[in-house]
Amino acid sequence: MKNLWKQFLEFLLPTPRICPICHKQQSQLMICENCLRLLETKRQNHGQCQRCGTFGYCAGVCDNCRVWPNYLQRNISAMPYDGLFREVILDFKHRHRPWLANILAELLAPLLPQADIIIPVPLHPIRLSERGYNQSALLGAALSKQLSIPMHEDILLRTRNTPHQTNLSRTARIDNLHDAFIVRHQENIKGKQLLLLDDVLTTGTTIMTCAKTLHQAGAASIISATLASGLR
Image: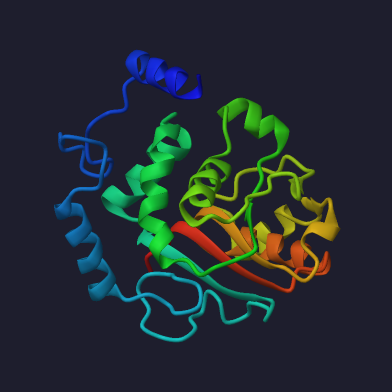
């Protein structure tokens, strides 16, 4: 019955058979070879910080993550938040294209280590109602299937509907997120290795704030992953 329902939905709302990055028509939804080569070229030309994944650095740590606490081990990013790659993130996040979750997860999955639990960065219920879905949770659900790692949306919760972080300084971002997250069911993360998941890392303030909350609740280690990170 479930497969029949999926087939019916696909008939009504067929998934576009395109490359989600350049929108080239294809036999199925997948990232085309040209865009994969473009991504690899950007990685080679710009480099990535080995700790936070920010593009434009060829170092173990950079100015963006030099002050990160030890309990946030590193962040892994698949692509730069730039050009066509930035546009596909905006499509996924703001332009009502949740069907991009699976194909974007396939791009990120090979880069990720094993973990006990996937924790998506949560949206406040008001923001979730406005957007209709949490893009990080959709991505987490796709990665959960691909990597056979359970995802929990009910552990890390957002208690304040904070203003958007865009255009805020690092200090303002930290103040904006003060006491914005809580952990429930702490027993489920005590001593566990967590994979914290978000869509984009710029200054890393959101990831760092969430990691602090999870660490204080007893997580043994935390690695974060984002679809994209900033280009310096």
